Image (cartoon, rainbow, N blue to C red; front, side, top):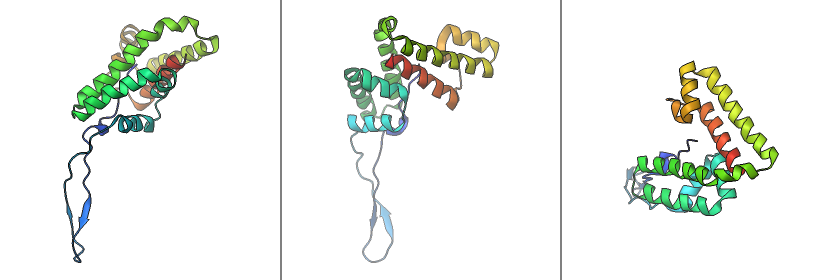
Length: 165
């Protein structure tokens, strides 16, 4: 599951417009960048309405908070690549940590997970070459070199159903 925190949260500068005395011209004045907080990162994540992060926050709140702290540290350093890598790695680590719990999930949840997986496979088969489909089955989502919005939405649905299960 590929999960990415948007790069827009890195390096958010505040540049207010100031008005001069009586002449109605304005000048931009650079203000020092505001330090991002975990609340800022959390708000940015929640604004995207991604099922995977909603499920992690609800089902594993301590893990979600730890992920937020790590992403915040990378964002404060202004390292966009690191923000992406931390969010991806955090989701992968959680999937591996909680995968042993899947056999104990209720049948209805397991059915939802399998349905999301089937939808994704149908999506890949309808849009990709046989070689890419084979690569997807072997290597997962990274096999798709330029995923479209609908592919990413399917991935999010898979991740959300897995973490809810």
